[in-house]
Length: 343
Image (cartoon, rainbow, N blue to C red; front, side):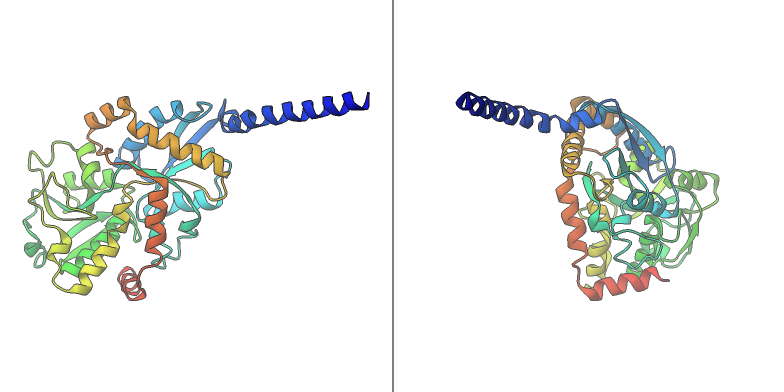
């Protein structure tokens, strides 16, 4: 009887072990089944970030275990800091919130931005659809046609906030290329600033992302509605080889180093993120689902039609590495960026 009891006990333990492993494997699916994921967009409705996020939200559910629903919520403000602070301190850390922050926000704490109430290295970066290229863009009616012209004629440039991506690159161009720009803040996002360009309220926008511009204003470049004065990024955009590359225009070695560091936000493209402290299995599942979404043939067909440029995906691990590397940059370069941003 005792032998049978032990034997039965061992059999039950073995059976339990066999059942436990599949249950653990299914835990992410069990968690997400029947739930709704909120996708926070740090830009305004109709902008490049928003257009891409809504397409991601359309295809991501089928790749997330458990097939949850996804709703998009816009949270513009302070150049993306409002949404990012929310994700760090307020959003649930259970895997039901993801965000599309502006690409400057991973680096704002590094640059000493007081409003950045988060540690960017503690976020769970999910991935990015592609690196970005940013372009100093002016409306066709402006008398300025080249960077040299912009060194002698002040341009009114729209921006969302003092610490936003457009303000950041506007100051960078002033610092390294000697152009004269007057930043006019208060536009919720790129789309609003581009509308202001059309109305003649401002001369241009200091950092129109090429992919976003093609997605929201696909005919502007072809119809010469805008002039592209200079581009900056990890690499030059091949579709506009005639537009000068900022690093090539810089004449001082220290300015080239500054431009290299400033291009880090563009290297991460339009990143997606989860809050800190989300269970690792859910982070891993979301990273895999995000990459599967970007490679989904139906997603790719639609993003190509919209000209979103989501065709060179980067993994969450790659984005995490870019962010962590930036925080190990030479102090003298960071100090110069801080001084520039404090202007």
